[in-house]
Amino acid sequence: MTPDGVAAPERGHFRRNVGFIASLVRVHPKPFFIAVGGAALFAICTIASSFAIGWVIDHVILPRFEDGHVAIGTVIAGMAMVIGIGIVRAIGVVVRRSYAGIVQWRVAQTYTNEVVGRFVRQPLSWHARRPDGDLVQRAGVDSEGSVAVLGPIPFATSTVIMIFVSTIWLFSIDIALGVVAIVLFPTLIMTNVVYERAVSAHYTRAQDHLGEFSAGVHESFEGVQLVKSYGAEERETDRLSGLAERVRSERLKAIRIRSWFEGLLDVVPSLANILLVVIGAARIRSNDLSVGEFSSAIFLFTLLVLPLRLIGYALSELPRSIAAWTRVRTVAEEPLDADPADSIDAASPGVGVELHGVSYMHVGEEFPALESIDLVVPAGSVTALVGPTGSGKSTLALLVAGLLAPTEGRVRLAPGKRSVVFQEAFLLGGSVADNVRMGGEFSDGELWAALEMAAASDFVRNLPNGLDTVVGERGVSLSGGQRQRVALARALVRAPSLLVLDDTTSALDPATESTVLSNLRHGLTETSVLLIASRPSTIALADDVIYVAGGRVAAHGTHPELMASVPDYRELVEAFESDRSEFMEAVPFGSAGPLGEVLS
Image (cartoon, rainbow, N blue to C red; front, side, top):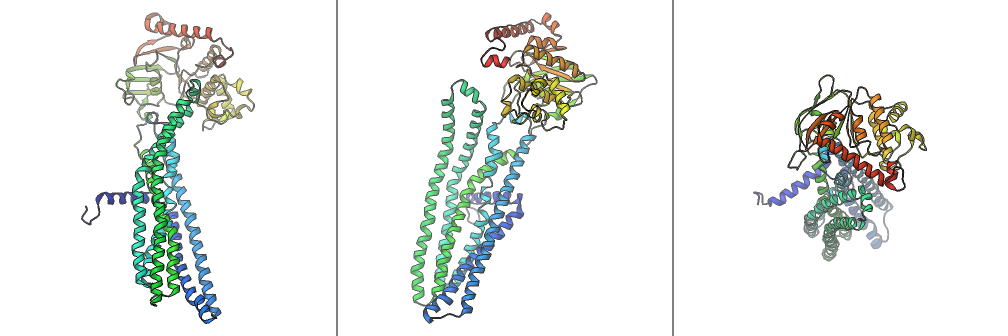
């Protein structure tokens, strides 16, 4: 216990809730306090309306029954009071609801922008450690869920005002009614608080499970072709059903608790009204209370039932909002990983790429992917990276492209832009022009020149709308080779000083590949090209070759030199040639079937 008698865990829980709401309000305070002002106006008018009802009963209705007549002025005064209070009360409702919605969605927009901005600023290494579906959940569902409590809060504040003022007013009317109020209202509020504490853990776990479910769904949709190819639909259905069941289970537990809570909110006010009728009848009989005052009190209690429910609704949203907000803030406030670009220095004159003592270890790995790499690539040259699977070629390419920062050592590059084209060419769902521009400002002439160099201009001209043809999600309307060439044009239009190609021509036939590489050689005289290659024909077109094995540079020289002096390199290249020849015999170029269509 603390010195003031409040249990420490309860105080911590209360402070957490208050601190959370305060953090939401600070984002856009002005519309929130306007909404609270409208709610306060509504609260005062609600209490005033019960007073007006009591006045009308005592001064209009009862005199009409007892005396047979009522002054016109009194009737008009009663009508004006009821109508005027009703109009002002309606204005309070409009202001409260309008600005509660405004602040709720403005805060959601701010959080979404903050999270997405954080995603954009984090480097590739950070994204590699997190499931895409979970990140989408945090930027979307979690950002919206975190502000769900903002909507009912202004109404809940008006309820607190109504309870406080009503209790004082009921005491002023009759002490017995005031005692009922001072017992009933705290009881209902404590019921709400107990409910919020009971469902808090369930909503927190449900929100976490929802993130896991979103990640699973995203992964399953991303790999839909793989799932269908291996007939794994049932397995994926069972896996996602299991994840969904975890969300469902926690939500059901919370709903069961809420059903008891809703029942209590129905029963307690009803019992209170019965008690009020008994007490009121006795107080009227003893002339301590007028019929109008008693009717006013009953009417007030009836009006307060819904607002008291709103406190419960706000408290029921609180755990879910806190859980979502925690997930949002975890990402938004996570320190930025070091920008790989900050670790890059300027290369010596005439040099395109320099690596000095470069090592790199993936997070969670025991051994480095690259170790003690020393390398110099002349500016304007075409250099092939060759090595067996898992040798570190792609990691080396990402380091040179500035997408990863070395664990040790320094990377030095020639000044200018860097462009990278991955083996799996990713296209957006827009037009060809949109995909090549990718947010840049380039003329149609520059787009066509880049497409020409990538050997893509002919097929783009034959598309239904040329540059304006919509390629569909991930470029689904184009073949693999066409997607690769559009992605290559996207890199070329930026006139980079360094172009990194990660097996970019793997889906092209040999003739088209030769054309592309010839265009690069003649069109990019000032650009250093670093390409990961597994075709002997591609390797042979490079000025020199870097042979990578076991995370180290095993050899560096021209293709003929390495073929003659490095047995492991020669064996690997011959294996490449043998594998490709066997594959082409099994699936002839241009043959029917999916593999033959890819090759064509």
